[in-house]
Image (cartoon, rainbow, N blue to C red; front, side):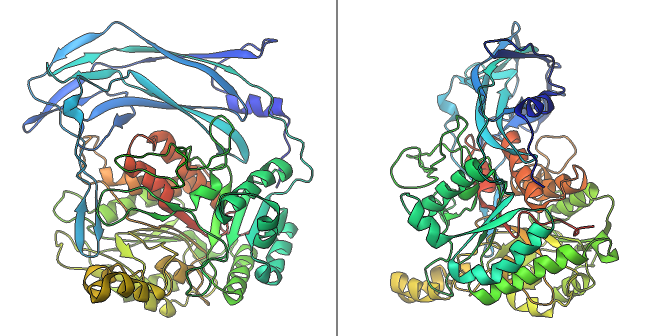
Length: 621
């Protein structure tokens, strides 16, 4: 599986289709490209104006700021490339007077408990004379693509600027892009190449040995590094950073592409077999100021090749984003990473057996060619049934699969039994989209926000008897993947809040012994082989505010991530689980640079892979 490719060949592959460049002795190269924009279309939407440019491909979408069309493009360079200069030269400007103010970007929503939350962040737009202030911006990030480490240069061009005081637009129809760069020298000396490292405590090593043998037999060269070894050999501010430094060393010494963390909480204690990192991004919902993010362990390098600490302001608070503090983070994964949050050796053996049996037996089976989708009306009162729209978009990408739709709109989904029966018949993929917490998943019937239809509770997992017909699953819903829950949160809550705990935070269900997603994955005799789920509040869009005829719930926030996983498998043929998951995060980051908008940053941080990143989806032939 490991591909050893000379750097010149990598360069040719990465730059094919980007235009001819001339190699010079100085290695200073230039990439140029010209983008021509169509004239802006101005229409009315009630008391506001709506502006569109047909060949723009994105939007400047700061919540409660004017909705301005933009153009985004990502260029890929070999790892180690020095981007020396990025410039965009625009044509002469034209002015358009507006009769009405431009409509604002809509507020995303989520549901927590039974309460609908709206991200009603206050805008400072009125303080600006022109928006956006810059005609273009760019971000340089490192990451992994097709098992090669690369540099992503994402360029955002704004052909329109809005003069607020005069209510007019400044438009430029031509943008000439010029990028100067030096390829540098990115060849490393690899002592012993591997594909994957498993990180786990020593007590799990015997149970993991069978999985390592299986991976090696199938060409995925794998080794185990125990947490005890890492803590003895590497320095760091805490154990999580020690593990991250080891992963960096494994990349540079062993050329690993995949990292599998095996270990969750130690039983129900507030202690970890393999530690976690908490992101301290405050989404301003008044309900969540931190959440678990395993992306920390995958994001090893900054765009300049330096170690990614997730603490750029060096105050000891990781991934901080508040009204007064903001860590600048790369966020693009440099390895394909997943976690099995096993709490004991028994659960490790369950997962080792499930992975081996799946990869050895799933190939060519009829059940694999089915995809079950479950959804309803996530936000009653709007023109779309959001969960069903996301389901439909995912099925569109998975055209080779037989879709089994469980929807509240047609009565095919009316409760737990419908879901249990569909899963128990076997399917290759499973997609829930609605609302959740660590112990349940549910949604609404059409236009009825007072009625809830439950799909699965944690205790319903015992009813699943799909045996070895295990799907790869995606679940859209708040906190279904929150794998740091424990029953001791009841005692902690009473200690901190007294009996008010049962009125204030008991409903969060963080006191259940394990989260919904892990309960499904580690189930014996059925469940799923892996799940991608959210460790915090899951935000989504409503309506069709960009007027492109496509429901916004499939294009932004969690809906983008959910559906693009299926695009990466069904359309782009990424059949390795970690590659499909990671490419989804990269697609999101390139489309919506996460340091620009708080909820974009949160979405990529919380979309966790609970499973083996090297898993061959559909099994080995």
